[in-house]
Amino acid sequence: MMTALLPPSTNHHYRGARAAAWFLALYGVGWIVPGMIHSFLPDGGAGTIAGLDLGHNPALIIGLFAWAGATQIAHGMVTLAVALHYRTLVPLLLLVSLLERSLLSWSAWVGRAQPGVHHPPEHYASLILIPVILLFLLLALRPAAIQPGGPR
Image (cartoon, rainbow, N blue to C red; front, side, top):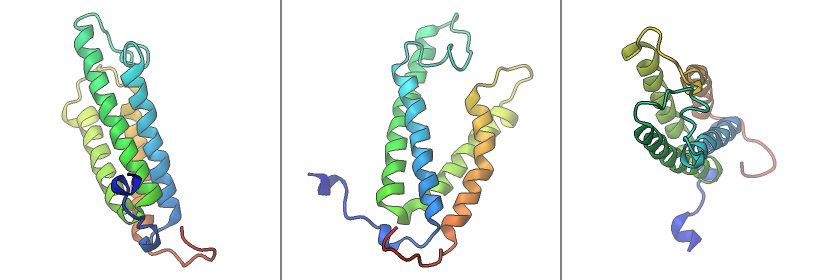
């Protein structure tokens, strides 16, 4: 059954930096943890973490956070699978992550930004992650030296 879900690993074909794959694994965990918070915390973290006012339509806001949490958990699981088992896809997933963080940041800080609007922690995290993801993307694209000791 597991071989049907997880075809053979492609790690032996990956030529990028090992650090890029390990960063992607941490990044995957960084998706799963907030996803679990959004899915399972009573307010989804909307009020307790993001500081949003839940007075107007709490059911809608909490529902949207739960929906986002479900997608974050799924995204994190795929990210972990790539980082740990399908490393040939590390550059692609880093590029997709860079695009996503760039669009999130644009939306939060420029395109849809409104003066005086509260920014949740994720808005700041996205700004920090853009250059970090870019660095690891470049490392993933750069062929690493052959390392003794077998597969990465």
